[in-house]
Amino acid sequence: MTRPSNDSPAEPTPWGRKHLLGLEDLSKHEIEAILNTADSFVEVSTRSRKKVPTLLGRVVFNLFFENSTRTRTSFSLAAKRLSADTQDFTASASSISKGESFIDTAKNIEAMGADVMVVRHPTPGAPHLLSKHVGASIINAGDGAHEHPTQGLLDMLTIRRAKGRIEGLTVGLVGDISHSRVARSNIWGLTKLGAHVILCGPPTLVPRGMERLGCEVAYHLDNVLPRLDVVNVLRIQFERDQRSVFPSIAEYFRLYGMTQDRIKKGKPDLLLLAPGPINRGVELTPEVADGPHSAILDQVTNGLAVRMAVLYLLSGKSETKGASVEPPALAH
Ligand code: NCD
Image (tube, rainbow, N blue to C red):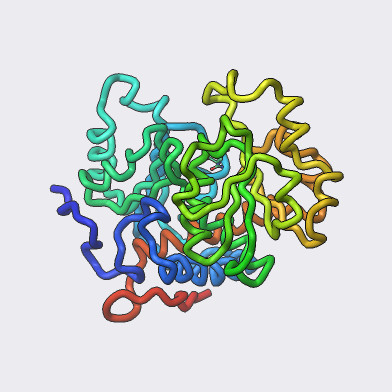
């Protein structure tokens, strides 16, 4: 028998929410609470013994219906560091290829005792659908071009740790906004935390009406670059047919590529983020990717801490009565 499906956890958890489906639904206070919790997990990762018993006995399943390197391994390692059991499920190696439905597959996985399912799917809303049909906690690890909340959170954690704040900063999201779930989660999170967000890319890659989400839209990177405290360089998603959206890669690179010369036109302490995978020579040069402004590898480190925080908040045991979102006391 499966547990009843609803939006509140069956047992009290530190957060009180059962799922993480997107940043659009979260309040400023909730986002800050996740970042504060993640800060304490960054500290755990610096210890020589990096494992804590927080989720001992819990089962975390990764359900990935789209390719992923960073996100899947980061969630697996995060769950292992919290002492949970983890299992990967990849669509190509599953009964999905024999015709089993998405929901039936998830129900079978739940029958194996999954407490948390980390779901990546090419269809927007797929994790939300699952949250209505299974009793496990669902974490959205990317649904089409909709949201990728843990990426948004790790970008914010990286900015906050580097700059000491998010409020009042100007953050540019550059490149393929249309296909980017990372852009949408950044927009929701950063604007809630008081940053000014500028979306910048070729007009064919910036959907109409994005100003309604509280952002500024610009098409000329060189005009806005000097105002930016942070630039988040989004990948051109070649796998989602891009043939007609700009004349050539060389033209894109000339107008939007992050080069040393362009970086020099920015603020001296400009922070450069890129969610990865990066296409060196398309969105940025190798010198910029590996240079002093780049926080790309910090993002990967912080991603682990964010995923530990989210797993803890959704499925850890509440230490106080009712929902507490304070950072946990982490026993060695
Ligand atoms: C991002 C994604 O999949 O949305 N990557 C990731 O999570 N590691 C960004 C991208 O694919 O460009």
